[in-house]
Length: 336
Image 1 (cartoon, helix red, strand yellow):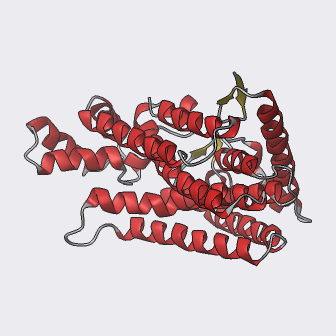
Image 2: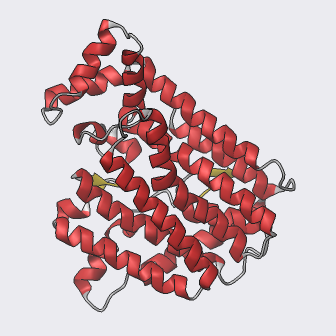
């Protein structure tokens, strides 16, 4: 087995490994080129997170999906650049909304410069992604536009919160499907579509992307609680400190609402308080790390990863299908 890409996917097939490595290298070059500007400061800000690295999960999925057609088709690499640029743009905006200080192990753009620079740099990346997208044809533009609408809708739903009578966990999973699943679904769709794969294959890889995208975000939720900054590339418990409710907290609250233990209720009360205080934040983080709700969130991650794997069943057996199945394992492994 050979490890491919920053995400760490294990690949058994040498030809597939060569194709994927070459594709990811071309994507990296494309990202650097797309983030250049005639204004040096814009180049510096736009390349800030590109050069910080990252898992490149979405480009990896594009490369694997393209194996079901012609992986060297001219639209494959540019479509992967589009998806990653869009993702990077959302990170600049997310860090402003979350007031995050660290991203990918480096100071976030808003911490290094200010909120205005971060927001405008995100807008610049969206513009560059749109410029590349225009050359990929009207269908690609439509797919991206629909996904972007879902992404923004998910962000708005998260900000607004569940309405009266809504199940908070179901609402949260809808948010994740929009914010994260939609763009990862596009990665699967673009890879298959740009490679000329059959329409049923395109649909299967889109469904796979949606499900593994949800699993990917749920794994991040677990990592935010369970990992240190070295593993996750950002400050542990950032979501807790900023009052962003993720699945482990929702699972805890559900237990408390069903008549939980005094310990459940006490931890809920702590989480509902001011977690900008370092001592209270550390206590809340430790409490969640030891609570069964964290394990429940891990099981949810596994369930969505299994659904992604099952979606692949109609595809012909090949090295790419095996790699996509291993990708499900990699996502689950991140969640412990």
